[in-house]
Length: 423
Image (cartoon, rainbow, N blue to C red; front, side, top):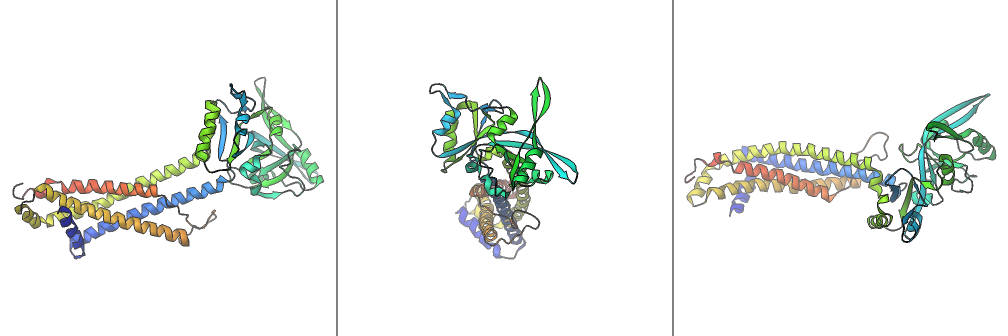
């Protein structure tokens, strides 16, 4: 009975009275807030998916690091009962391919001949020593923008081959060797300096003889690295049989299950990181921005609910005669309060339904026809969309909760019912 009366009041909004106009404005405000939240969060999810897809190919599915330091020996025993090393453990998994990686900060030096003079260019970089499986783990070769026709970096029989990121190539004005003459010149002039600790004193150790066989470009974060064979990196860094991580790619999709199995086999000495854990800054930034968006829209919804407070207040005062009749017919004050509470809830539910429906429709239009464009030099020229139904669920709950509190508070104010009989 209470809901029927509340719904009759609601469907009388087509009358052109001031209260109905305010109520329609309330519905429009809540609907627009819901649409905005769905669209903005879908754009955030779209950018997150875009960045993830850009990095997913060159970042391994899982990465194994030591929990006790930067480097660890591949000969260390992780299972005393079976006398197995970490490599022995990983070889038991038929669904993965893995690569040992050794990385450290270094200084790259290139002596370039200009006329009769020699110009020495230097740049800080990070060397990454990798083995033959690395290209199968990260598809590095797919990112080569220039590579040599004669020298193949992944031919690890020649320890002198390196590939450099675009950022390093630009800083050092470094080209790709494609002839024997170019390779000979680079072998004499391309050097790596490693900071070596000897007798507690830092000492720069120079390593000669490298040939650049390729230039790759992934992103500004990764284009400051150089790659060489892990044997050469171990020699340069004086870390035989050591690596800083083991990167692996799974041939199936059960990454979470595989991560748990490997972590269980390796124990607490090692940390197994998935894609998100390898890029914590990116996901912290995205999550922080999403939280900020939620807070902003919570304020917008609260401000919008002020119109609901106004419309409910005017509406209740306008229905004084109806309340008097209902009380005379035997209705309790509690039931009358519930009628106005339900009226407010119907407005909230109607606004949410319209907001979610229109929000999903707008997201579909943007995703299908790329209506909103991004101007400037960016990866894509439109706002990407990814609908996350967990976000939509949170939006619905958020608006419902704020609307419930608002409707309950206004409908329960005894001020509106003090002149009624039997109060």
